[in-house]
Length: 305
Image (cartoon, rainbow, N blue to C red; front, side, top):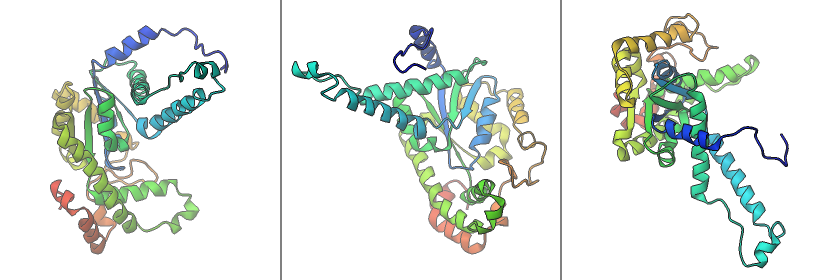
């Protein structure tokens, strides 16, 4: 691409803006939760619905946001150099620069453009994105994009810790796995992370109860149809039994894992085991007590103890 000619070929700005405006007529939503809480499964469940488009790991806030911010700040710094536009300074003025509202407009436009591209090929009533860390920025996302809804999936922190240990193990070369810290250490560490995630979601919920939906991973496993139906109603899409069953069939553990039944473990798979309460096979009573000491109040709220 030329560095002197910004032309991008045939680009219809009005048509693009109109497409974004039409997208805003849909229900925009974001999914978040602690890592290894079932956010990926939930994304696939929702995306299997004929009236929903749900992408994943776009990292709008963790990656896109700071990069756009840095680019606009660098541009501001460039045009403010007196030797770039000396005549303007001599006449008693300063170049116009991007302000906070302009920055948020650019970020929101980029996010909506990404969601629009993601939804191609469907005619969804609800369009969303899943990145676990979204839960930390539900408020920021709602300030940028009006009318969004936020979904927070919660899982027993002990199972989260165990699953995270195995997730880390997958990225460690086999020759180095014997040097990994033991499972209980990760479980104890992630108890604090889990508390921070839950508190962030509940903080948004307290201020936006009509735009927040919370579900437990355990309920999605044991009561999948009614749990999914509640989500569908929250998003304003079809919750008929046949639609729910279609979603569940397409995204069963057996389908996602390549043919394994829940409980049949593959330590190298992202979808490792697919069961509830696996922490009982990995941590001792002392570790359990320490997790409860860290996260007990919230664990009681969600029925984990």
